[in-house]
Image 1: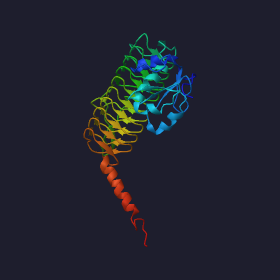
Image 2 (image 1 turned 180 degrees about the horizontal axis):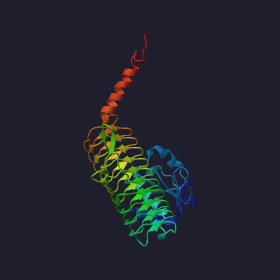
Image 3 (image 1 turned 30 degrees about the vertical axis):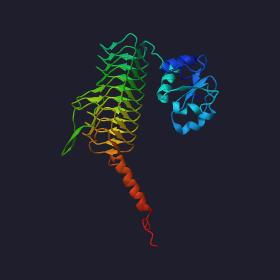
Image 4 (image 1 turned 180 degrees about the vertical axis):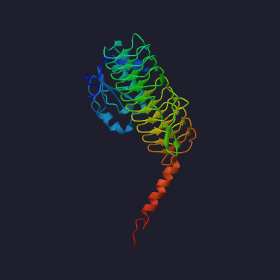
Length: 344
């Protein structure tokens, strides 16, 4: 059941007119209708609000029991008479807004837990929260209303902006964070990058002297690692979203509003321009440039620069039309007589 009260604080109820106003929509047919919670379309009941964005689930709309549903205008005619439609051309965005209204991020609890370790000259905003067992290094700065979770380590000199959420078991070194940055459990930021010189007797490590700069509103998923730069900085642009288990190498520059999905890996000194989308398990060679707005499909192996706006797939990565054309040719060849060693 969504919104289990053991785990998720909730607000409400709200009159439907309030929800419509929040979304900037016209007043609904029954503005006084009271909405107590949110729920998925398939299980929502009276007193709840739901949504439909993916037409794959349109069949569930006809049997929806919710008091209200957020839908695209094209789907309004399929909403049951017992359900009030809130119509918008961006149903999922509206749903996110309403869900955040009912389930806002819980506020921090200002103060420093007695078990936390605070280094000399660390500056912690009076309204910040420092959780149990957290370590704040010498000279570090924790901004207003930021939360440092249990057992997280903020290294010496690290700067964390306002309204940041550092979840439990995060390690932060050699880093400067903007405002509203979220680091989920197990994130590692600022460790040495994979840099070494090769000699006749083995490997010689190269000092990694750069930093990690995380822009405002960056969100980093659980167990993701972001190496500090070797000489230049590693940069994650404002508003970018990294999924769980992503690897960002040293000196990588990720632009604004990029999306990197789980298990993707970007090698050192690659430049990814703004609004690039990278699918799961995609991998990048080093020293590349990926143009603005490019889309890299899941499991792509990128070994060359990618122009702005390109859609790439496959390993080695190629334009998506070329990839599917080759797949179609291979399928036709596989269906030919004798393709599988037949002798008849």
